Image (cartoon, rainbow, N blue to C red):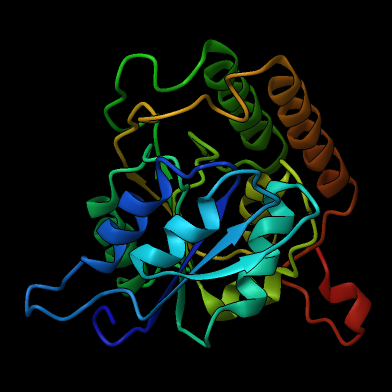
Length: 252
């Protein structure tokens, strides 16, 4: 619980047995100034791992669900389906690249009235080698496209983020792969939600290689997923200020 808001954490994970335990522990150890636990529920989605990711996550105190169909968005959707009802959902990567203490900054932004708080790696400190050049370039290109197409300044598509549960439900998230983060941000813009960015530090993953920046397949897949999602959402642009009576029209 954070300032009267119940908080659920979602961690999508694939082959992160060496990283997932410390991430779960750090989240469950988060406390308010009054000493109360911040995270009310925590679900790790083991996205078809071939190692002991699920076992390590459970041992650290997480509830674990398994989703064999690979995909970042699919893992998030599966974890969300298992999450207890909460006011705010916090998304965190399971590779130790996030400074978990900064989750409090994201939650503070939500408590201050934001619908969606993005942890911007571009605005924060980045450990050398934390992101590959293709990742940095891709974020800049996608951010520029969002600015040009929707007129909103965005600096990052970072996965470390918090969103009000009712806002997330309204966004009707669909992407099952790498387009998940940009889908959330653009739909929030289309619906004229209050979106803020807070600086977050970016750390090098402690073990293993990045599923995105560490492989050519990951770089290409992420690029196609992000750019394709931007194109689709542009074609389905809506006027968020218009009252909608038809259910189908409610989908950006």
